[in-house]
Image (cartoon, rainbow over all chains, first blue to last red; front, side, top):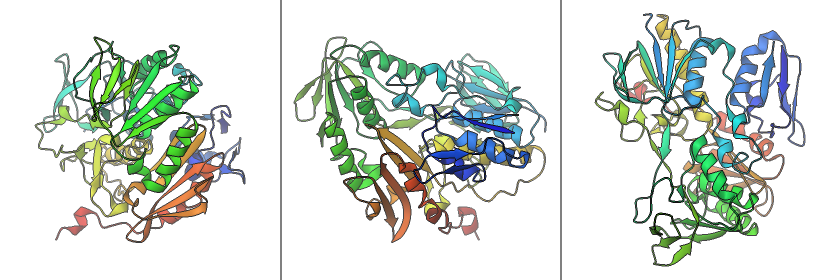
Length: 62
Length: 411
């Protein structure tokens, strides 16, 4: 499962980190980092992360 | 039970409720009715990026989850009335829709000022809630040399003032009867910092004053304050709160005194197949004492629809989802003059005891809000990294014990 974040839209709100901590994290400066390839087992978490993104910047590509 | 699920309200809460029903395995028909002509879209940018032209309005539409592709959308229709016990909804054109279960997601509408003076669509008096509202306001902000008066110094009013400055409006005045902007959600310490920020960007304030009337013949030319003074104005934005859309739920024996009262599972009036989600729902707030509250932040529609969608899908399948009562940790943010405000929890319940947790009030700051000596909310205000700074305290809020639900109080 490919996880795509539109970096032009992303504003480092970090809500995705709470929803899918294994896939998203904020670095020391508070900027978002994420896995681009995530395990199928965390699909529901990544879907939740996409839902709660205030900028709707997260997309899952199968 | 195979009948359709009717979702009333086609914004974020309605969309997420439909998606969560599918995610939880409900394969039967789902219809969503909404009065706006648009598919669901993201509202927060309407007072931020989209209002300054940094995000096209067309980019705000949500992308529904693929498994919800067969949800039926009835847009441009309002549910005028409902008979919950009979499973019948009546649309504004008189058509009747039957349902086996219903989700109320009708949200809020802007409160309007009731005072003498010009009114109506061409009066220059605006509100900001919908895409249509935002497009109209954006067009006005681009007119050269306008003088803008914002009535109300809450979230929307402060964001509109900031967006107007960024759009090149030189005269922006914010009027509010309260002594400071965003005083109720942020408390005095951060409200003062916010006032300094706005003033540094040229926004003027008339605080401690209300609006008595509007001047103008057909179109507004001035705002008359309580004290009689007149502020010249070409455009006015009324940001004075919002009213829950619950009229259609009348005559079902529900408590509609402020939104619609639900139980801890978000069910209305003790009915097993009628739920409310989003900012129209007044649910027992177990995280903060158990008294029922409505929460108007963006996180609520998603959180409540996730809960209600799962509970309802299980009910329709004849099982019990076994969900603990709904107990969200709210969060909100605001962007003003390039500064982010990020909050977790319920700072509005702890404005009487605010302590600086990190940083200092003249720069990037994180403040803790306490009730009865307990931390109930955190708010960070500052530049890049603000959200992360607030998030570092989020876990402490999640550790607070929940109050017993009202059901558990019963003998």
